[in-house]
Image (cartoon, rainbow, N blue to C red; front, side):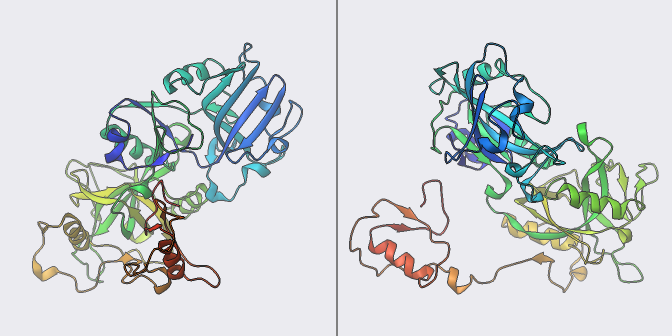
Length: 448
């Protein structure tokens, strides 16, 4: 069973207006566990056997010996579908792929360990369950296994019915620094190797109108919850005001967004180490003059840092949206950090005027400015990587004059990303059209 890429606005239609489960999209290896009494087998989506890595019995491998007791007494055989992820027992959290830890290479003496996240059961004691609706399968799953933290857990589910629920769940996932979410129709049956079976995946990258990268300043920090309690894991970000001090630096910074994803745990640790001696407790009765929050001290951080002691972060988001939670009157939707810019000076960030101009362009109408035209800056907004022209070897081919010579690719939609040795992208696109295919520049679920 595979998930189709989607955006929140399409969830209700693709779910056929039926209720759904929302689960975390884990950043691991998709695997199945086949249990037959004391024998365990592990298979990838492509049927590759990883049993020697994770163990076929309770005396071998990096996982099996730790989970043989995690099945109820009545479970003799079963097939479980899930994701093998890396778990750090010292930090009690998952390690994402970006940390360059291969879950298949972990051994007993590794600092980290494999953890199997189960999200479906396909067979139990010889009885095939794939034709049962998901809402029934998860009940069977929940009553068949015993969870063990950091080794063998069931994917947590939330219930939703509309796009507002999907947006809320995706925002929560981003706040938790997760990759995205899966949306699953409660009435869906299990269909192997298809993306049209009632499962969707929502990630920030799939949301339309992704805005350019923005340089913003860290103004404050928020303590996490649960296993992140006591750790600053989210940050208040700001833009520079258009007023300047005697040194021609921004006189203050306005609250603009809150971010909690995009960086690895090691990157977070390094950032917190550099800021450790700079943090101050935020007191709403005596707020710092250099940081301006929305009226009522909305989005008040637990700690703040003076701008001249802070660091710039490069942030990507899906779009700007109106908000009274931040002093700018707008904020970022689905923000995430793509880089921590220790090389940039604290004052070299997006300004309020520039943020307003970006919001105006995005909305297709003029923004109401709080500033006079005399203060319009002459320098360009600090927007990174703005592409003026597509490189020649990535450009689409004009195939309007190409004659179809055969229909071997008739009905097939093909996306050529780049060429190969001896054949340019344009050459390959012409060949596709000559053989009856259709060229697209942005692949979809049915694209080859």
